[in-house]
Image 1 (cartoon, rainbow, N blue to C red):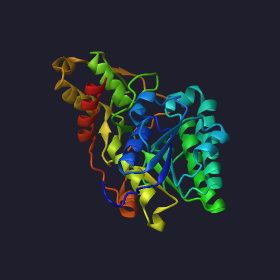
Image 2: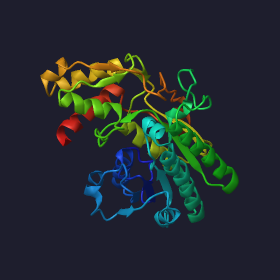
Image 3: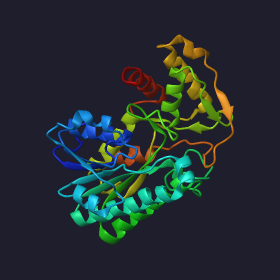
Length: 328
């Protein structure tokens, strides 16, 4: 890691027991920061942070961002906020838009208000590539978006509007990071709303046929967790005023179809279990709310933050598969 990253600061990570949040907690502690983790364990896992519970610079607060008092408690004395807490998943939001809105919008607003009142220096938050909606332009450039295709996408766009307004109205510096299909260690392969890579990994490991929605030619800019950690640390530590109060794509900048993904997974998993190479996939109907193609321009992040993603999709998949075999 670069020496320019923050050290000896107090950082609140909301959703710090989740997939991305727990990786951020690890990285911040490795840089000798104090970390406060706020999580209600709705989707976060205690096992993701159990190795940190006795760390002298780690504090766990069990709380819910839907409760303003929990947010106020968590931000006391904090320098920076990394807001990762959210209810992810497009299908989940279609099944239950009210809860997704309560967490992702009302909870987000609670965190902004608490951060403003506590004098937090910078509020970096997880935005989403789903904000691009029905825009067909490729690659996705930050200032060109379409109409949201799901309640989840609406909530993440509203986050961006609120963040912009809090800078204009209250002077709170924010940075929004539009994540593109993040994957890697600690990502939960179980549950109805598991992301495609860990879900397919688990199914292949059990010699079960994964189901691809559609013909497999939908494509995604799959982004390994280390690239996401780098972007969060850059957003926290930049001293470039022009880089603040901006929205950035967080991706590798490379498109992979689901069919290509399956072939890569078979290759990687086949190194551990040769029988996986023979497992067939099943094709089902397209899923409501899915964006057909996703590919990010990362020029803005490179130019303003100095972002240099270190892991391609294939390199990240190699690391992820290794982690799943060693930890599941």
